[in-house]
Image (cartoon, rainbow, N blue to C red; front, side):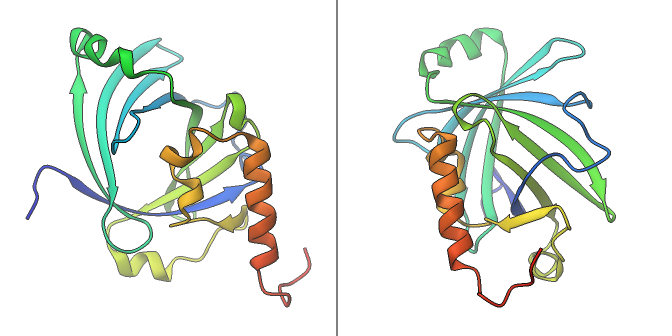
Length: 182
């Protein structure tokens, strides 16, 4: 048993915008994820806008079985340690993360910035895999993209929102024709 990494179980959904009562001005954190090329590593910088506090984390993430199951190992870095990894910055995704409870579940809402501006996601985590299957998607979910490699951060890092738009059109075409009209 590997005790150096925690298991993360989640489902990921595309959303059109932050659901009420959240607004872009709601409390959030800023994430700067720099993916180190040809590795499973990313340097995550977290900024809390209210306090201007920064945290630096070296993370290793890799799939661990079924869709939505990941192993995540983290090392929290002090400033000198972070500076040693700073040279790997450049393949970056920036996003604002909001937190809100819906139907008794905590959600992370990511609003992407920069070239991915327009991409919005909602992630909900679980303690057990059977909870994942029993979960009913919330009304604000447009498409589920759990396990879709296109939407993994290491793949999004080189994309623009136009690429996301093309992928979403593919998802829309792949949906059953009998889905209810909105």
